[in-house]
Image: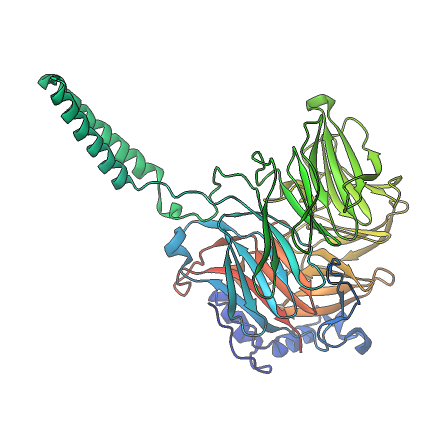
Amino acid sequence: MSQGPPRSQFTQSVLAVDNVRKQRRTRLLAGLAGLLALVLCAGGWMVWAAADDGEAGNQGAKAVQQAPDAIRDTVETAPSSPVGHLAVDYREKGFAKRFGRDASVRAPGTWATDKTLVRGVGGTLKGFEVGTSREVWSTDLGGPVCGTTRHVTADGRTAVLFQEPTKPAEDDDKKSDDKKSDGKNKKKADKKSGKKDDKKGSKNKKKGSKKDDKKKGDDKKKGKGKGEKERADTPAPAPCTQLALVDLDTGKKLWQVALPDAKDASPTSTNVTLTRGTVTVAWGRGSVAYDMKAGKPLWRDTRPSACENAGLAGGNVLLALRRCGADADRTYRVQRLDPRTGKPLWTYGVASGVRRVHLVSSEPAVVAVAVRGPGVDKLLALDDLGAYRSTVDMPEGRYIDDCFTARFGTVETCDAIVAERDRLFLATKPKDPEVNRIVSFDLATGKVVRRFDSRGRGAMYPLELSGGKLLAFRGSADGVAPDAVVSLDPESGRETPFLLFSVPDAAGPVKPGETDVLVEGGRVFIAPKELRAERGEDGEGAAYGALGVEGA
């Protein structure tokens, strides 16, 4: 379990923080007031100094009255002070010893409540107390996690897919003993029946056996290196068929079911999502829905069909992506489903000639299509009745596009695209490591409305729209100025700080598709999607798992 440092008022200077960063230490957020003051005086960030006091509120979020099984919709408010304090510092100790110095382990899923930060690592879910970093629970699922959803209910529940438990491989020594035993029994049987082994043949056989054993041993040595010890996330032959609803504050599995007729469900073709009162899963040849309260089946579609279930996007409404035909004749349909019955409420047929389709958002309905190459070429917006609304063009190489590169899930994986109400936000690819912009589009017309320039203060990308303001992550431009989550006003174009902090080097560069960045309850949580052992003498073989920051 990881313990964070004691909470203290602004005690670290910018020099101390920078020194800590260089030494790859991770407990560096006891206070950043000195850092903030220095940076503001430096002039590069003076635009923030003029922010209204009215922009800041109490730590946390505005309460929104929601039913327990509704999908959580937190309206974030900026902390009274943007200076970040450590809330969670999670490091997976003994990582190198268990998995190897050069190994990486997938860590799908990052969720937070008012009390707990939860991470998925291999086949385990772990909960950490916000404020102390203490590990308060750990739930072994029995198999590697193979699907998660970002959606959480208003009372703090989410769904997780994991693979069936697999039997451990037989020990080599045990297999050898079994072979010897079988050989002895065979000899006894041969003697009893009057059979005699040819001595010469037996001798040659033994020589061959030694050669084979040596070759096998050499192959084994070549095939397994230091970085291949006990890989918790090594893809197992077992399908992705186990579904559980989990309480994020307690770690308790509220119910668990096995997906029906889903032996071909794999981590790359299966996705899980939530909509009000319902948990749904799609895996190519089938889809199924369960009542959130007790896991009771609501509907299923596992009948042979010319169309496959390519994915389900949840939230306040449920969208389904259907893939029909093969190769050059392939077509796609987007449907809005009744979550309690699975019946289509409307269907939109994507134009032919499209290579790939992805569901970016369910409300508003936004569909990403790839026509020419592997990346997204266009974003199509649909209205509430499934009619075409507008197109946002994405010229090759202009915008950050991570929709088709997700490690898990088939839809709802575009980390760098935010769609909300009548607006859509994209981040341009940096011209140099620290210069880019976020572009806002009107979904009614597909036209550009506003551009937010990074001005060399660190590349930005959008996270979410909350309370009418766009929250975006901005990395440090020079390793001295802080990393930040900033608030961008779509109407005025004004930028104000939400939280300032410093991401440890051990957490790796924060990039869409590689890092989870979550804003919840006025706090910011940053977690790599793959864990790797820290470098350096003070790493102790640990892997950096998550950073949580809160304001004053």
